[in-house]
Image (cartoon, rainbow, N blue to C red; front, top):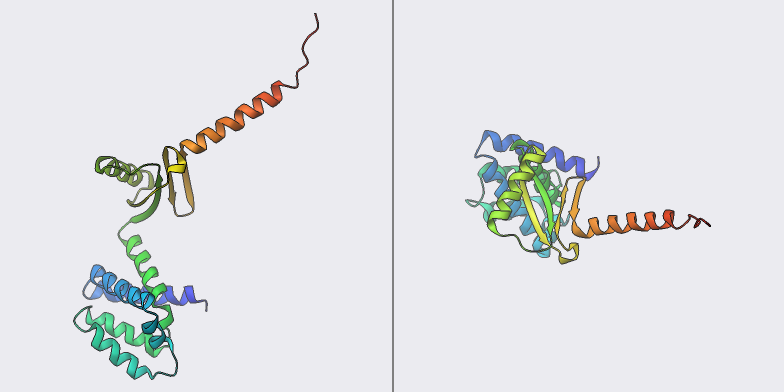
Length: 191
């Protein structure tokens, strides 16, 4: 099986576990924290992923480090991940879990590019409009890029809505070039 598929299966199991126990939010924060620690600390990642280190030593270290900080059932889940030698997938499992929670909560993360920083009122209006457009609660991730000149570029999944001034000017330029080229082929009438 591909790693993505395996990680998705583990994330689905974790999602079911979270719904039956402490809740999606507690599990989501916990798995995100663990994934971040593993991702940010090369020594921790090496400790968890090295086959020469006994699984019991890894599990003992996790119990000590996470005890009381994350739901106990999440710790148990991570111990199973170690038993199955899938600890290198913790980051992918966390990403897949977050996607399942977003789907369950009817949320969509949207990349928004603007030319200038947005004030609070504009940001709220944009979020509301995107939510209506997508039919889900939009969670915008705003990035400022002055090169778009004005307007907004939105990426929701595989769909891009480009309402930038740069794109409009480029389209206008192409139309003008096409019009002048087609208009330039006419021969002046001789009278």
